Amino acid sequence: MQPIRETLCLLVAMGYLNEHLKEFQAMISPPKYLCTSCGRVAREAEVLCLPSPIDLCEPSAAKTENPQ
Image 1 (cartoon, rainbow, N blue to C red):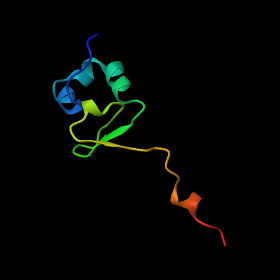
Image 2: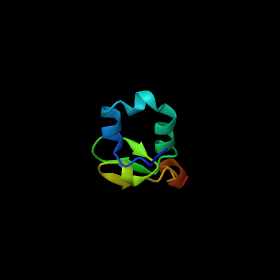
Image 3: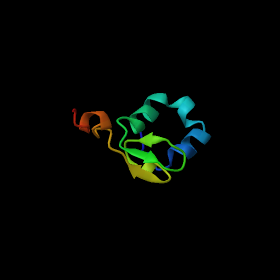
């Protein structure tokens, strides 16, 4: 299979998701980038229109609060 050179938005519009579900899942898992335009997530920034890195391991506010 050739590497995908299109954005996820275009691939979905072309019907790629309907025909290639497993390949699409491989492109988005594990998510490392968020498209700030459409909200899609992906493993590689190149498949998103406006990618922004995401950190899914940030500590929550509850864990950083000091108990009294």
